[in-house]
Length: 296
Image 1 (cartoon, rainbow, N blue to C red):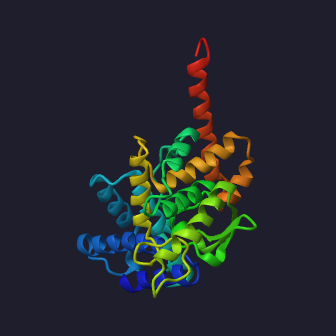
Image 2 (image 1 turned 180 degrees about the horizontal axis):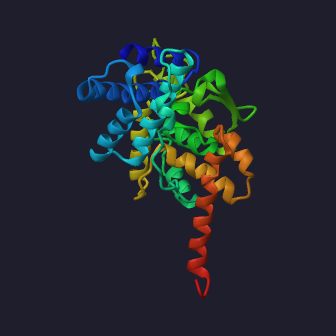
Image 3 (image 1 turned 60 degrees about the vertical axis):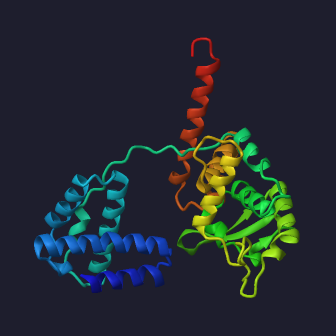
């Protein structure tokens, strides 16, 4: 099955333009199934796979304790792979079409409240080493609701501070323009003028945010920085980059922004993905009601 998997991953990369992380996750799911099918069922040809093979593999993964969300990703990978193989006439029947995805409990994103965000951002001393860089990064994450991958890949030529926007490339290589607020613009300008030049090395490219060797910051390092800054700010909540994106959306909604506008700002293809924030806002309203209503 390896050849069919390689062909499919190439399709995801070249024709669909999907991210390296998505390709890797999909490959891991499909190769795990291929290995199981060969070992347990002696099946090595995708055309010989049956629905029983698929459900048997999923049942075993479930018994191993795999979460419903992870099982769902495997089901999605199998379904789109078999759909691809059928469309390319590599196999005759799409046996994965009948697979049902595991039901998921509705996930409500975690957020920091507005005072918590303010505490985090204003605790960063720009006069300390790398303080201007870290303040600019966190201000931008919250001001524009960027994904951490969008932040690490942000380039100077995409940053238009005079116009107050940044051009980012999100999931599926889709590009969008996102506003950058006044406070974030000031923090970014201060970093670009006073700190970034000190980080530039011989091989430095045009990435906005640099590490101490002049290379671009990795997503893993940005995660570490956010957590370190939250700890220094005295925030007990588990703070991570995507938490600031969730907070960005929730605070916009709570202050009256239209859901469609938030969808565009976040780069969501489907409004249903954005609607999760309405549930977060309703949860906050219920908490306020219980706290302050005499019969709450």
